[in-house]
Image (cartoon, rainbow, N blue to C red; front, side, top):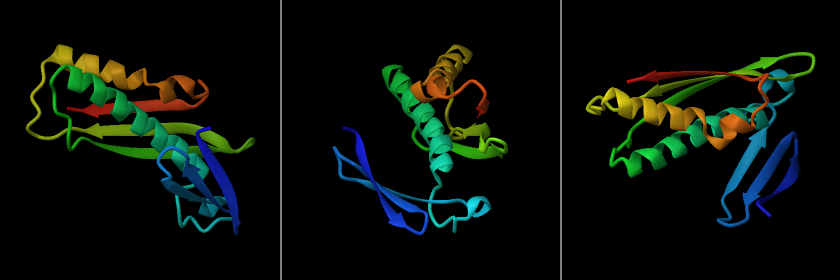
Length: 134
């Protein structure tokens, strides 16, 4: 098993990662009867996409002896109605100012991000808009 989830009431859940025992709480968003005091489940989907992209990029960068420490991703999730679902996820990468890469290295890292497991697992109806600000 990967995790267990317990419903805590008041539209809150607590997920425990079984290997590490780390915990993530979720809350319903403001626009769906929640308090938005935690990530919503759909926030986690959008965040998982960015985290996966950065992790796969980091693996490739390490193989290429490139240090991506300090790289940041700003993520915006857009919801659609009827049925309520994620319609699009915008991801904007910002790299450290001193990072100097050749065009070939940038392309390799970008392709690594765009082909991460989460990106490939999401329904194609969810638009993924990715900007790499080198």
